[in-house]
Length: 134
Image (tube, rainbow, N blue to C red):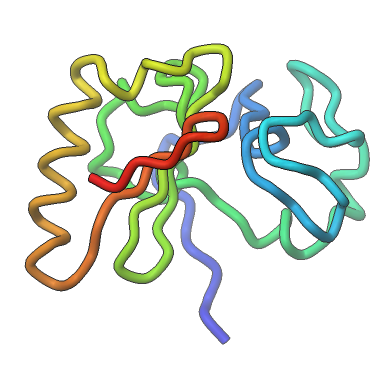
């Protein structure tokens, strides 16, 4: 069992609820890019105290990586990023489908992909029904 990641100093979810919208959460019968039925826009989870472990144990990269620039804050970047082993996964808000191709994001994604390639890793971007491996 992996230990839960530590929240980076000074970071918080604030009013961001992208993790309640962007990922597919089978346990809650929630498809990708659809709002969770328990999410209250701008406030968060209505079942927060009793939320399932899949939600309780998740923290996006913004919350755990102090080196991630302010531009990557999900409510600002309109993207949610997390690591899965050698993979960096980027989920793009469908209301901002091309944000990942803009700066400073695109250059950083390319840099991450180059760095990851040396160890067999990669960056994958999910934009609505499209998937891009960088």
